[in-house]
Length: 557
Image (cartoon, rainbow, N blue to C red; front, side, top):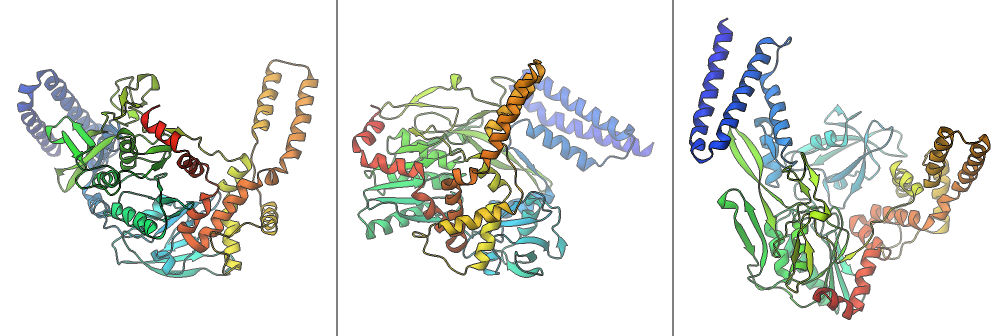
């Protein structure tokens, strides 16, 4: 009884404090005040009954966390509660202070352990002697068996300079090996590769805007190429660039747009978020022809840069429509050493359009919905070129996303290319330079033999259609001869499918080439090896050759 009275007193006290806190709000918005107080009372009553009568004891913190997470999840994916227990990791992440080993991980089908799938030169794991293809067995003595990629990544992250001991298994080695890896922060350069893609065109691949100073890295790369070559045009590759710092996006725009021009504005409910960001300095180059490459994973700061090049008619965007993230978050202290990361504004490009692709407000229907193309609003660039809001940045020249053949997808999914190359790297100390290495006929036959020794399965589109026809004919009770004919066709398709590994040799060999080069020359070599066969890069080069077409696109003709 004493415990119940104590709990009731605390509940009433908390509700009273909450109501008093909302009292001032009632004067400015009477229509919402009653609904807020009513639902707070209901929430308090519900929690009291659960605490008092539920068959098992409940953990207050766990129950409340579930409620908080569910409430915030109903708003958008970027609004999150950061508890006291999570705060240190959050501070490290936000301050760029988190250390890691610099390895990409993958979980292979049927394998209880994660495998290193990507490793760049100079990373802690590389310096400790680890390689792509190594399977992580234990971390600081604790087993990594049956742990997800996210679980393993969380354990590998820690204070910069701290040591993590990893036991791993390598193909061709009879016993596991141990590495002492010293975590580092800000490991990777923002630019994995820059170079000339022909005699006159400079190419810069920017992987992220997260790192402060990445704009200066881009500028320095272009200046170096200009000093060594007759640069007449520039490609900035923002594919798979998930964004980062707003300030770096503003500075990047400023490289190519003159001082004092609008880059982005933000608008929110609170007056503090009615802001404008303009180019602060003299531009680096406002005349050189420019192409920006984008895809569906170009987001946030990448979209600001690409969208500004369009709105100012400064460069041509080629590729696929960008991700569509136009929301701005801010972190607020909410007591007890906890924080709330809250969406407080949307950002708008110089034309006035917002690129946000998903509507979370319920304006069109309850719940999150992709803004329908029919409801996207028209906006115009400086040269009166037509633009639309509500769906990312549409490229000026749209290119289809590459879709691999079913057999290629299967080889990638089953990690057979990764495993074959891991074995190849173990047996070969060196290969030809990245710009000359090719997959020979003999090497491809080695791969075919390797694949034939391992099981992998896939259904071609034709086989899927035949199965649908079989079900349809059975349902509609067609003559048995129809089914027999379909089975004969299916058998012929299955027989023909054995030649798919040669029918799609070009795309499979290209993936092999890039993966092999990546093991010896890392991401820099991998990017370089992909450029000659990259249709979007080739489209950019074609556009630079056709100066009239380039000019017409920017003028809206």
